[in-house]
Image 1 (cartoon, rainbow, N blue to C red):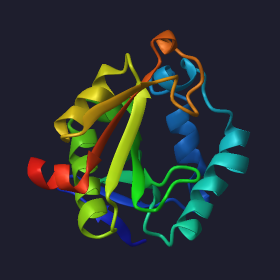
Image 2 (image 1 turned 180 degrees about the horizontal axis):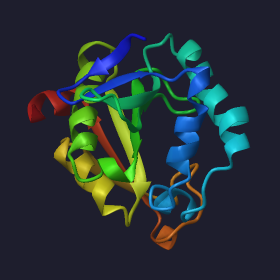
Image 3 (image 1 turned 120 degrees about the vertical axis):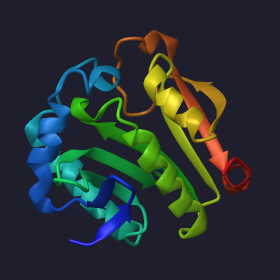
Length: 188
């Protein structure tokens, strides 16, 4: 399958209908789901019947340009998680959410920063995106550090981010970071 994006160490590709087990395994790790569901795994039937079909439909909705993409190590091909670059539920196509969910074995290796940096470049140079935003729990210092390394700026404290069930630290709410094309050009 064709790569959506290659970085020094990773390849992103579209998910296929055969990838449910990858998503189920990722979402079954309590540490991965800590700030999303309080560590509760996503039910396999929910992945198969709702999440994966929604991911696949997103490619159609956004012309294959935006969506949620499987991430694999270029050396050895191991699945490490996913990255997304996609508009909000009813948002304009020139504003995109940046996000990621990685296996624990991929944590601390710089993958989130490496791939997110490449996604920003693609968004601003190839896809006509003018603003990229990301949300996380206020207590998720790891994700916040990645956003700051990318040159994204804190724009707002938010309620618990949409789609994130009450979890550890949810009483502190969420945070939103953004970067515009102009800010990205200055930061590079």
